Image: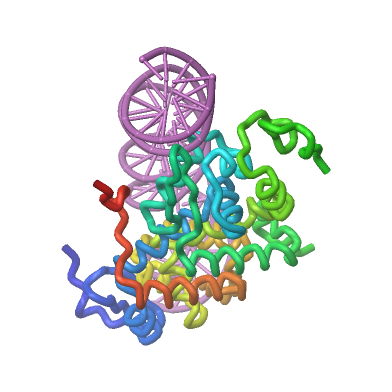
Length: 140
Length: 140
DNA sequence: TTTACCTATGAACAAGTGCGCAGGTGTTTA
DNA sequence: TAAACACCTGCGCACTTGTTCATAGGTAAA
């Protein structure tokens, strides 16, 4: 495809053709980069927390278990949407379910996610909205 | 705040008609629920970490600042995609940029996100893939 | 039994998002 | 000067993802 071994400057990591400035730093960072599956799994978990609805759902569950209809009310989702979201969270082992008759009580089942939630909430609580939409910090 | 003490059966939170089982618990959870803007902002931040590419980008930056081309190589993104991702991260004040001539060096600029990253990586490192795809824990 | 209720699911739709390509801006070098 | 370089951006495509409507399963009450 491309033969870049003779030219002096550019150095690739494993065969990918691209300009590299700090080869040493790049090598170090690459070596410390988590494995692909772990990375994808991590991104997945963050993705679960990336929506207000699911976030409310999980925040509500930090207080203890709740049934689907209550969770729907608290999260502002329809019961259908809440059930669906809970199924997703359950598939990722973030929540677990306890069934009693026709009721289904969900609860947080991942200490890691709980820490993430605490950290996030604590942060937003004393951090005045970082509203984006501003790219250039306006330097007159 | 809202009147939910007299009616026996269905009780809504602020006017939404929906079945509620544990009215007290619901009221408590709702009262402790973060404000809408904070919630959206939090979900936003998690959304930034919800993709392998951006995650690699940020993980690389935990080691120190890097230029765009090096970040592209490390993250496996094209320079175009890396630039765009960095712009997004910059808009949310997650990273900051230092320009020297025609180079642009990016660095992590949010201690909170750094904690989130550390926590996530530490978790995935000693947690054997929680592969989903399993919904019902097999209950015959 | 029938009825009412809570939860779960299927399918279709709509919306958002990431990426590649090509071109542009500003800077350094020949 | 022109050329090479590093970064940035507009356009369009394709993929993923969330939401809703309607319906089905399963349990408790009449």
